[in-house]
Length: 197
Ligand SMILES: [Zn+2]
Image (cartoon, rainbow, N blue to C red):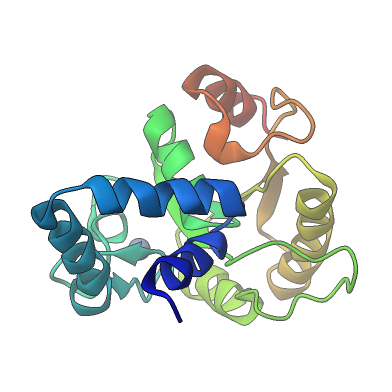
């Protein structure tokens, strides 16, 4: 395949990127210096060599140790666990600077078409809540959309069955419906966390 077409096709697979944007990325790279292209290639390869998945919260990170910096941080509140759909949502909450508990990345949301939870780390989440004895509350911090709501219902059931004593809360609806956590501003997230119920 033509190298320009090949790279355009690759960029088109990125979330939210259409053919025209993919084409613009390739044109940008064609105009860029060899050092810029080299940096891109090295960064992509670096994902394979220096990034690992945290065995506790399951987010991707680049620290030297197995556990990520957040899980290794002894100053975080062990009694609180935010269950999020994705790494991006974790970063959004972290950026808001209003949350000091622990995290668990579920790895997605329930698909409304299939209502299946396949691919989600439900078993790992259950193991987390039963093996962390200081935990008292799980905050279900899923996107404010139908998939997020469906996920919250299912995860609440699973956790209640696993550990009836665990308090389960959800983000308050300071978040407008349909909004993705990763695009919410810090004040909105702070309100949603403060008003959890
Ligand atoms: Zn971690």
